[in-house]
Length: 150
Image (cartoon, rainbow, N blue to C red):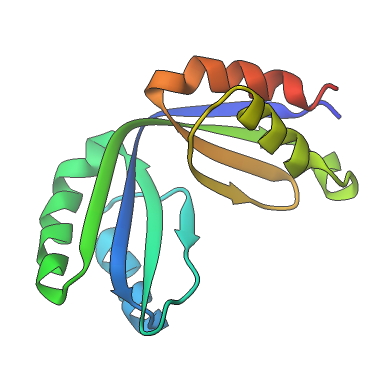
């Protein structure tokens, strides 16, 4: 396998903790953000914990100020927004991933062996994307660029 690597820099991770575990509410959050003309890349929805959940997503750092105006309104609903800027997304893409068991294990082993803290991971059958802080970007890029060649 020879995965292609794509990088996106200047990424902000937003997590909405204690959000209602209601798909109508979650859909309205993403509709409101779309109305602000903000692109969302990675999305991760945590398993429901009773009546609440956490939803995380990434945006470009340039869109942070408009988003903060929106998330401040969510605080009145007991939703806790957590925002972390200065991140990068590293995506590994290869059509052959779908037919090769163990790709995720190689990626997680490379990250673990390099002692890198992942912020969020999203996958599809042919792509794995990880969000890392800018402080460990070079280290993560090196680990991931070589892990699938072994």
